[in-house]
Image (cartoon, rainbow, N blue to C red; front, side):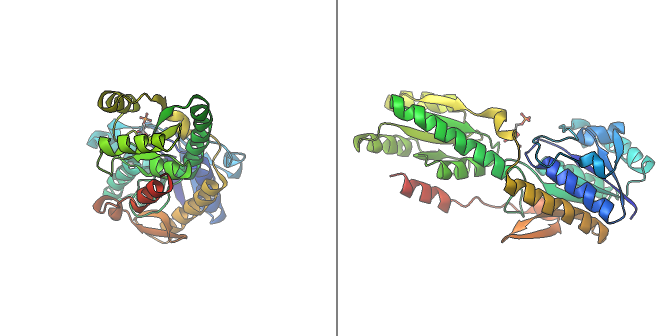
Amino acid sequence: MKKIAVLTSGGDAPGMNAAIRSVVRKALFEGLEVSGVFNGYQGLIEGKIEQFQLGSVGDIIQRGGTILRSARCPEFMTEDGRAKAMEQIKLHAIEGLVVIGGDGSFKGANELVKLGVPCACVPATIDNDITGTEFTIGFDTALNTVVDVIDKIRDTATSHERSFIVEVMGRDAGDLALWAGLGGGAESIILPEKPFNVDAIVNRLKSSTSRGKKHSIIVLAEGMMSATQLAEILKKEAGIETRVSILGHMQRGGSPSARDRVIASQYGARAVETLLSGKKSSAVGMRNHKVVDYNLEEVFTKREKLDLSLVDLAETLSI
Ligand code: F6P
């Protein structure tokens, strides 16, 4: 193998830059040529491909976002789009591709594998919802961002003796809401993985009020319902007034945490190693504190469950 390329795709995540840096530097260290593909799969289709040197990834380890830019690309999901991408891959003599992104990006890589392009996928999404790895790049930074916001909201909630609903990202997964709720000391955590029980939430709010608690924080994963909907339900069902904070895309921004930089560096280098070792279709990740690589198929065939014992713990601790 002489030349590889790297792209970022899907929703951006803090730490993607650290992963790009790692892929590029590890590849150069191993004597490979390495190119950056701009704008994800769209850029692959359009040939937005640039040869990278050591300096191309200087001064980026601490930056949020992705210097390669990202995109969601419906054209790549068509045969025609993929044929155009293949033309560019051949034109640029790319023999292996590192894809940094979430499960949609991994599906794209799987299509390229079917066309004979070896791919190594690096999990990067604040949702932490990739099967086979305990942690994705960006989750830790987003988690710290959300906990910081919860702390701030708690100040004003206490001053005004109010209840707040904090809506966090997580289209299909409650990891961010669960960890942020536990880390932020939320009274209730509402997740897509757990049946919604309005009575239980109302009872918790009422019992904490009767014990003299004047404020509460409910953390809600966006995949369950919107904060506005929940506020309406609580008002209608129990006459409970809440204030709503929807955190939105700020959760995807900011300088990556030290932990995200470290795992991004580990994952990026491991992805290059898997390509060099001749693996055609792999994902990298973390299991029991060890960096691993595994067959990409696993990501699509298994579904890992969220550790709901953390919900029980959060409820126990917020009585
Ligand atoms: O997949 C990551 C994520 O941030 C989800 O949590 C969120 O629902 C979605 O992306 C938002 O996507 P978009 O970038 O299209 O607004």
